[in-house]
Length: 433
Image (tube, rainbow, N blue to C red; front, top):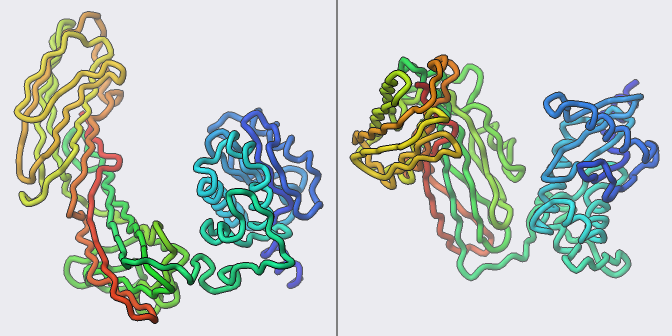
């Protein structure tokens, strides 16, 4: 019983296929030979029969499991007749997408057809007997080159990184100037009801890094004391930032984080996403919108839109776009605004009010007037599309998260400069009217 259970936990894939949208196999690799290669056709039959909305990422038929992801105009499909961990396979397929994009600039039918030899080599190196192996593009590029030179095992050694704990980084990296760029980006998702109440408000945050560091540096990142990671029975004082759904890049030493909340890691070279988090919290809407819509029976409609910034005056929102839906038959637009520019975009049935710079603590007004030639009943209130707001606020985070320190330790003892930027952007930011 135990042996069987261990085997099922570690079970790998039988074969991987890359198919076009019509179901034609572009390339395939049979790792175990225990599933008929015709099984790809059965998968395509499933896909063609089902409505897009009903198709699940994992299908099962006659003891064969089909796990797939769709990217651009190709399907990446893994098949197995074992009790495999489906989440692991999905993650592996996404890693394949990342590797192919890294190698060919894009993953689509054409890039697969143009690079058959390299794709085969990569499929061989990324998976062995159905078990995921090397999936880090920078390490794969050390021995599978763009020219498609085959790795000669007899006289070439595998890069030591593949057998190291830090398999995603080459230790011979050298930079003249050692620098780290760190971006804290928070996206605000907000839905305000017609009566002004908040129906949904959350912050989705990411910490992105760009590392240009020599050797094998060890980094430690400290966030401000207000940041509290979701933890059962953890008491907080004052205004705490309760983070939920925190996920880290694979380089972060999770055992260290679990014991003392230190974010410690040896970074990959170049750009990567260090961590992601979410906060479900009552946010004071950064840009408050009030709309008065006056419809005159079958002749015209007037809009009065008031926009107010509810953040501190020292901050400025850039590239502000307020998109106000209008009836599809509206014509002869006239606009008046105290700031920015207004355009009627009939292709999206909306007017777009652009404000390049919107300082904190300010209020602006826009009026619009349209003719309504056709006769129709008033739209039901719940059918009216909401007003959408887009913006970017640099040097600012809604949560109050701050980078306290970033320590860079490397055995050669070089000095490195860390650069930190903060940015708040609109995610899905909607106001019902």
